[in-house]
Image 1 (cartoon, rainbow, N blue to C red):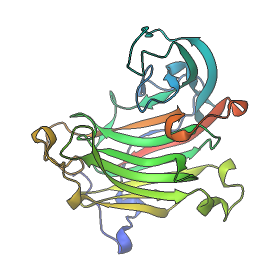
Image 2 (image 1 turned 90 degrees about the vertical axis):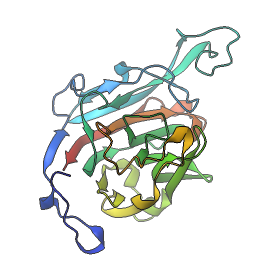
Image 3 (image 1 turned 135 degrees about the vertical axis):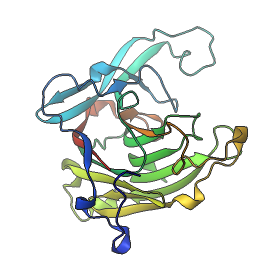
Length: 277
């Protein structure tokens, strides 16, 4: 890898050992930069939101993803359909999912995202990465941050998953930290910006929140389980062109729970995204 990382006590790597290769500081009001592409429509997890670019804007130094309560016809509706995307007659919520799939991809290094997340019932904000080859979960998923209700408690998750020997059945390395772990120390925690960080080399993926290590994924154990003959390791390999891209999104419903419509619109603020080698 370019810029090989120096080992320090407890796996911490000094900032000077990294080279900034790309960032978006969201300093220009208006539409997000051309580096970002968008998911559109109903996409995954039977979530409630219809993804569209219109819910993402840059204002006052932040990318703002807005979750809205809307009611309009679903343009892909088909009467009698059994597919959750097409059997819904109406769109009830909208949001945005921005990705770097067409512009910026990485393998190893550091990613930092400073953000303020919505924690209202129904909100499911995330900072995550997906591999650009093979179907999920063979392509490998890294969740730098997810927030939703887990085990009956609002929680911050820091995860990775990869493929098993069955289609669409993931093997998870999951970290679940109750939100109270943070708010007990700082009652104003949800009103502030925080820094989520991933450090990724050929041995580990380490996921941090405000420099607190939430999860350490041992990459010697993340090889795909053989579905469709795939036994590659999506996090450590030399497959030509294989890299991961970043997603920033605000999902509504599903794991986020039943939305509290009185709290809409929801706002997810991202101050910056920085990628280092």
